[in-house]
Length: 307
Ligand code: KIV
Image (cartoon, rainbow, N blue to C red; front, side, top):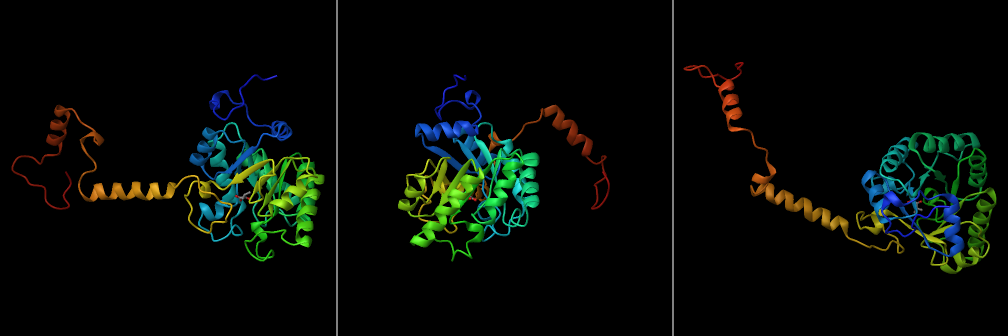
């Protein structure tokens, strides 16, 4: 049995990679599970250094890093580029790849092929898909093919239009029952974990009574086993649409703008680069170089002439 310390402050080198049983153990011990999204090498390194348990290469990257106005247009190939970059920056958190809209709904074969690409080409440990209904069957097929699946219920942004927009779900008895049924169906299909997004805390609390796998909440209150936030929301990098649950823990975009503005000001004022930012050359070498390019005595190089 490992004796590796388990606190987030443990240096990366001494931490064990997070496994599915480790997540289940955390749930059983009542230790909150921390998940964050990441979309590139630096954000993965930040997640690693902060000691989170799970990293999701979310299709929210469509909006936060690719500039689309929803998650719908992002392609599988684009998601794989992001996932590969995250993999390079990550050692210990479990890495989950988010299957984009249109990459798994059509058939079990399509879903398995997409999940396999996340694992084989990007080194993901697991994949995530959205909704109940047909997605439950797709989750089952992927799990049967040997790839762990995370479900996602409540507000599912890939189908936000059908849900009436980006708004909380499960706010009527009928809709709460729908979310409840989707969560249990995904659990029965064998999902190792499920995301509850934007549902009333009391509904999440009620569904939690039936859940046996780790549930990660986002805008679902405090009863879930863990929480997830979008990297750019929590750090204040993205200033697009921001839901009420997206608490800001830093204001990184302001710092970035201030930094680039200071750089621009120094360049324009001739204060950057200064001597300490430049390279030297041995004076004899400089002299030889200048002599080598000097025109022969009495001849001035004209425009367009070879030296
Ligand atoms: O894409 C994403 O970032 C997500 C999380 C909000 C769970 O699906």
